[in-house]
Image (cartoon, rainbow, N blue to C red; front, side, top):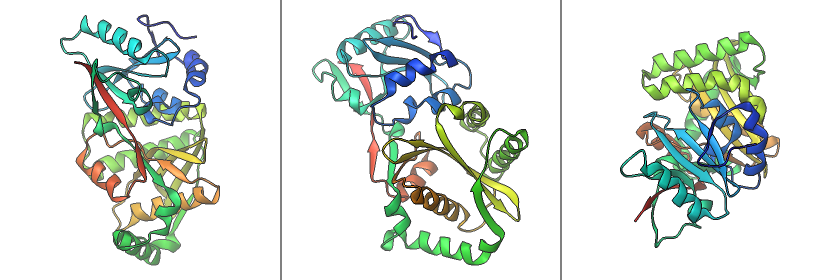
Amino acid sequence: MLPTFPDQEKLDIKHALALKKLLDGYPPYSDFNLVSLYSWNVKDDIEVSELYNNIVIKFTDYISCKPYFSFLGKTKVNTTARLILIGLKKRIRFPALKNIPATVAMRISKRRYKIQEDRDNFDYIYNIRNYLALVGSPYKKKRNLIKRYRELHGERTAIKRITLSQPSTQKAILKVFDQWRRTTLKTSQYAKNERRALMRYFTFHTLGKTRNYGFFYDRILIGFACFELLPNRMVMCHFEKIAEKKHGISEFFLYTVLKILARQGYRRINYMQDLGIPGLRHRKTLLRPQKYLKKYIIKEI
């Protein structure tokens, strides 16, 4: 059971069932995904409540770590937005709601609120079959990279499912993550938070139906990818890291894992948001998304 806003409670495993019931039937927005929500509660400061059968969540920004409010639902959304903003006015001068899913934003009054795209938090949705086909000049470079890697390293490479229950596997995955950070010189707060989120994922991945894959080179784990199987033949990528910089290795890994998922009948992938990180946006854009799950910022006029 969830408290009624403005009362809120820190996110706890006891809330999982109530949250799942309220989330059922909505598009798979990554921020409102149970596995993601519990994994990214790295500072134990996410708070949840309910208002008019809408989920109200106090998040912490992935990069700045500043708190913000969002909600998902379809009942009395204008009243819900107004009441949350009234509460925020007591804390900050210019309150706003962030990461508001499009399914909510489309019901918000444009006469009363300013609604703007929250581009940094759009979820990227890809058609798996289209990507695997790699048809046309836009994919020429990727075709060549995948082919080249397969020719040079295919016999030394294995990609297979891994289970996260064993401490030795968890330790190996964290070692890959740390090697990735050193290789890419990622020292930001976001990278630190992502490592904490990955450690929490080892526990909370069981809230969803997940598939986790390891990338082995000469039988040594050098990469991993963590997916959740969603309804309507969709998957969500929670984590993906490669510790090596061999030419074409990341393209080969993604292509091979998506091929495995396609054989299991999955057709689309939610590759989550880019958070406004230039390199991440460039990479995800090059993969040519089929569409976005858009989110919005809501302010009073």
